[in-house]
Each structure stands twice: as structure tokens, then as C-alpha cells.
Length: 502
Image (cartoon, rainbow, N blue to C red; front, top):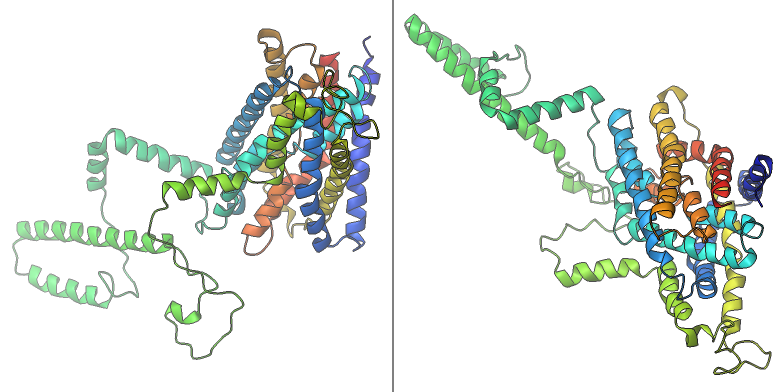
């Protein structure tokens, strides 16, 4: 039975009421000083390391079967395509619009990472209980499907080192040139590679201009002036023809000296600065005062390359996260029928080959019930943390200095362009492949929902840790606009997804 447009819009908007309620609650208690930063950190650690893994484990064990495990591959493919397109759009925005220096690499991370955790699960838990879905069965299935998106995002962000891009914004000291100068220099370098002779001939024809006054000792300093006077007195005794050749040769040599001096200056600018924890005597300044540092000096980087075993161990240790461990443990328990019968009802196994406990439940049903109980705090706590993060955003001192064009462009890319791409992609996979069967409505619905979520809030925490000042103003303004428009844009995406699955 098809629903009217009004019913579809109401169904799509109703989950946002629950989401907004939790976000507003977190905002209010933070502004009132009841939810401090230390408290928020403790709740985030609890949510990420305890409740979310418990929710993933309970959902996968009850929802995944040998018949629908093939959905894992199709969901992973769609998630990776979303990330690739997001990075491409973010790179185009960075090249076309002005992006501040503290967000040049962070914008690529924002394009890749979306809030695939609490927002899609909150929508699934509300809409999955009514038509056209199959009640609690589809709710558990939707959470299990969403765990694939969470796995892909967490794998890219932590083990594969995507979070390290946020640190690059605070290591570069040079200002970024405008769009025209940046691409003009690239085009000039491409021309030089194509036809280097013509470029060298053009450089030789250009006259060498030297500064008349300089306070530095060198070609333009006092010693250089004395050399010029001696050369001039010698040139008075030289014929005119030889004098021209001598002057031409001298100009070329001075030009080469100047270019060498400039290149050395640029090398100094690119040198790694002295760590702030190093003693002041290391800078070459005279200082007899002894200071006590709370942190030891930063050790010098090792000159030895890491072995293959060290690289493999470092990569493998990045995967040892609670969410990943929960997924790895839950998949065998869901797919191997004797193991699954220990946790939940399985036809042909529970009560027959595997006897029930005295309460007439599977022997390990209490483990699954505990996981469901712990997982229940995941979504409310995450949404309250989101409201607290928004409450702590600092207002810019001058609104005119904000990169409005790039902020708006990033919002359009994340919450308009990507959903349009996701809608057509999922429909194409449904109509022309077997990756998205028509009868699996929850798989289609969740994949479309995940294409229209704002950026992940985890990036804000990581960026603040990498920034020596502990702030992330540009990132915060991007997140504020996306989450402010989330009720309207997410409702539109959810309404379209409901219309497609019906």
C-alpha cells in the first residue's frame, strides 16, 4: 500500500524530532555548565569503547545469516564509492575556493568521513518498526548493515592513517597563494617540462634587476659595493667592446649568486622548526636561566627505516579497536549455526541439539541481552555529545574573515551532491545488478540514508588534539552549517528513500 506525500514526509521527519531533542538537551546542559569537557570525554570513551561495540555485536548476531551475508560486499562497495566521491569534491572545492591554511588537508578528511554511526541508526530505529519494513527484524538488520559503513569509515580514519592528514594543516608555515597564482605556477612548470629550451631562452632574455640598497653583506652589501667600485675602476682601462662583455658576464654571475641565495633562504624556510619542548639553549640564544619543563625534549627522529614486520605490526595494531573486534567476533557467531544457537533461537538447533537453559532460553542468551542493554545508550549519548560539541563552538571574531564560499560549497557537496549520487547509484545497482535486491528494502533504504549525513564529529576532536592552540575554528564553522541544515536536508533524503522502497 503506497503512502501519500504527506505521510512520507511525516515519517521521514519524525526521527529528526528525536535526534533534535537529544542534541538540544546536550546543548542546554553544556551551556549551563552541567556537562563539562571532562565529562564529555568520559562519555565519548564509554560510548565508543563499550556501548557501540555492544550494539554492533547484538545486531550482527541476530540479523546476519548465511543467506544475507552477501550484503556485506555490496554495502562496502557503496561506502567506498561515497568516500572517493567525497574526497574528489573536497579537492575541487579546495582548488577553486579559498580555504584557510588550518583546513587545507582537513577538508579532504571531511569529504571522506561522514556521520555513519548515530544518525542512520537513529533513523532506522524509528522508521524500521513501521511499514514498509518488517518491525524489529528489519531494525536489527538495518543496524547490522550500518555497522559495515562504520567499519569502512573507522578503518580509513584510524588504521590507514587518514587522521594524520589533520596534522598536516599545522605543520605547514607558508601561506597558500590564491587560485590564479597557484594554477599559473603549475601551468608554467608544465610548459617548462614540455619545452625546457624555450623557457631557458626566455629567462636569458630577461634583464637582471638588482636592488640598489641592502643591509646584508654579500653581493649587494658593503663588500659587494667595494667590489663594484674596484671593478668599475678596472673597466675604465678596458676597451668598449670588452667592457660590454665583462658587464654581461658579471650580471650573469650576480644573477646566479642571487638565485643561490634565494634557494638557500627557501631551504631554511622549509626546515623543521625546533620543537616547543626543547631547551632554549638549543636555539643558539644565550640563556643562563634554568627552566623546568613538564615534558621531556622531543627526541630526534630515527634515521633507520622501519622493517616490514614493524610496518605490518603498526598497521595491524590500528585494527585492534573495540568496534572492529566486536564485528570480527560477531560474524562467526552469526554465520555458524551451532554458535548462533548459543545466543538466540535457531531452528533445528535450539532446544534440540543444543539444550536450553533452565529459563527455557539459549545457554548464552544473557550475553546477548547484556549487549542489547549496553547498546541502548549508544545513540542518546552520541547525540548529547553532538549537542555539547556544538555548544562549545567558538564564534569568529570577524564574520567577514570566514571562508563563506568554501563552507557553503562543502555543505552542498556533502548534503546535496552526494545524496543525489547515492540515490541514482543505489537505484542503478538495484535495477541492473544483483547487489541490491528489491525485496531487501532495508539495504536500499540505509544505503541512501548514509549518502546524506553530515561530516563526522570525530574529526573535530582529532583536529583539536593536533592543533597546538587546541582549536579548530574553520572545521567548527563547517560542522555548524551542516548540522543546522540537517533536519531539512536529511528529511528530504529520508522521504525520497521511503518513496523508492515503497
